[in-house]
Image 1 (cartoon, helix red, strand yellow):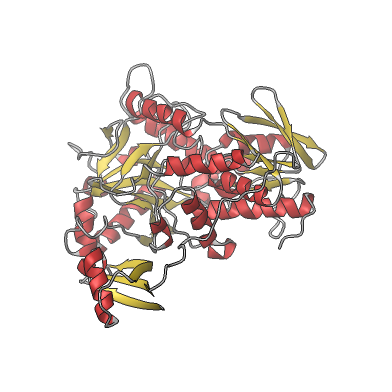
Image 2 (image 1 turned 45 degrees about the horizontal axis):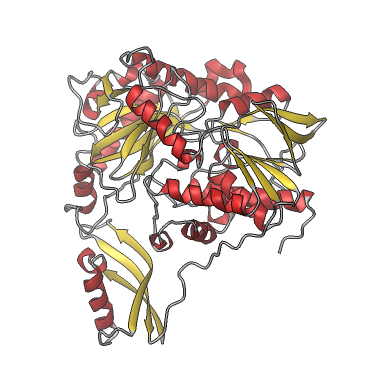
Length: 531
């Protein structure tokens, strides 16, 4: 016997296994026997009212074994001797593109400029503790890309671009917990993602694919308007049926290479700003109207405001909110300073942080227009260099101590006399953030913060602080491609992919884009009919 039902419950019932079981069985007027098996299939927390509620979809199996929650099996074919395709970048887009190529009978050769997960940990320790930035292996570059050391958020609105459930099931098959198939806003956590990424890589290698680390692409082998292959920093040439370019939003040298080689690129909208950090207990109280520790997870939020400064309307919004998380140094070049956020799977840090950013527009980029499609990239670089220059000196290396200011002080234009405790390991330097960001970003931020403070009492007080700069929200460049074939608009056999190409905004959307690019490459150049 099987039965499905949807329930709305108090957290004390929904999130406590024994209470949940008793409540469901009583609702169904059934006795509590070993033959009754309950399984949640969907769960979301509704904190919009004064009383928090939990929405749960549950299945009852009585006298029979339940089927697996995820149906994906790692039965990949052997493609050791199959035709090859190149995948540049081993982030979510690149890894999922490689696995999809294998499913379709093509051997992927993955070229990743950064190190494998284990080696990469040492480079992250160096930037956190010694302020040393390795330009090839850092929080943005290396196995798994920027997603490996992140909150591992798996929520996406890009459901029309692919099968979200399939992506989640592949992650479960490679070590993620089945909870990501149930939670409305699933996440894996920075402590668990590295092993999942390692297992994805091993599936590629076990099926006969290749994954090469510390292998940086420095040139394209172009023959008229056809991309035949690439050249790496060690002088090797790689060729294949086509090239899936999935290098991420921080691979500035790839954008410059495209421009140099005549591969059309264009500027695209993006946003920049700061990270805002609060005590997690403050956010819990504001969102839940009660302490969260115990049953309820660390609370999150999403904020948007429309502002007008000098007659120009600009959106101000929270981005990549990390409850119970940490702020980390995400620079990819010495002499620049970038911050980002991440959370462990339990989200049990005493800090909450979020990107708080402003839409960049033509007014900001006007002084950089002579850089053509790289105008936004140069704007990014200048702000990141300015942020680094304002930080205190640490030994012989430019410091990764980040500029910071308490929120109310920022709104009032006062340099903070002291700063709050922080999750940001390299340390903070008290500055006026108006000296870091141009007024076209600073003033809208102040307006947005005032509005957010009205919605969440205490949010814009000196209980929180701003830490800068949050400049890598998305790529400032798009590599244009055909809407249907996903092939570059003017270069054959090139498939721009993922966040770096301007077509994704997170782990799941990047993974789906990687799969779609792999499918189109195979259809066009391996002459396979998709089923």
